[in-house]
Length: 308
Image 1 (cartoon, one colour):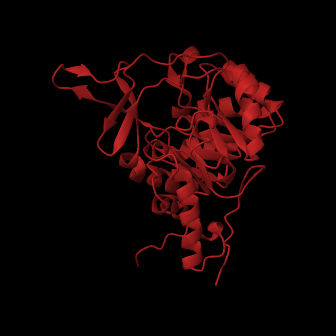
Image 2 (cartoon, rainbow, N blue to C red):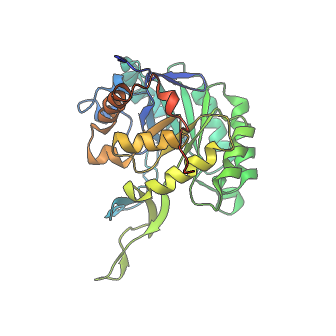
Image 3 (cartoon, helix red, strand yellow):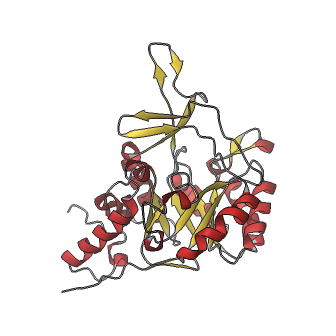
């Protein structure tokens, strides 16, 4: 009988005690959850998207519940990198859990400067690059919709930082595989996917969009089959770890991603449903491995059994 299955994994240079972490944007700066969950038990803490300067995000209303999901247009509201380093980071390090900062910008220069600043911070283990943002110098074309744009951006970020570099991919493309491969070729240590899917909701009484921004990002259980499919496709063309995201609210959901090819998972909307979701999933994944006599979580990775 296996008493203690091995949940440890490695993402780049980061050693995680287990493969479960919150997704950027749904866990604030981590501290918002410290009274609800033991942050020391998480595989890593992924901070909400940080920009060079503070951002107020989009006007309200900016969150709408949809069938089996959530549509949001928060607009990456955040306190800016300097405020985060001065006011939030010192309080987070006491938990001795790897800290990964998610970054975004409107130009290559924004991303590069953010990575350069973070590279100097010994208490930050890794950087997750959100490439779902519009490049204002290229007419608003999203960095993550073109393999060439992705490669150019990530290769330049790679030059200025030696920290573990994770690239968060957008699902709003025809084929995830060329983007995943371009991120790997540019020097990424891992990729995470999927980000939210662009959606829209309308109030039929007023005939007005329900979000002030008109469109927003759809997350939650409704998008999980798409996330699992894209993780499966991406993991078939890259050798670096893939982190699965999208609609994970239970340990069964998490294991589905791992069996499809993910090394780790991030919990997003699940944290808003139940703040203890990450911790519950960690415990239940361990119990599943014990019950099924599986020595290591890594043994489940891309272990799909195909029909004959």
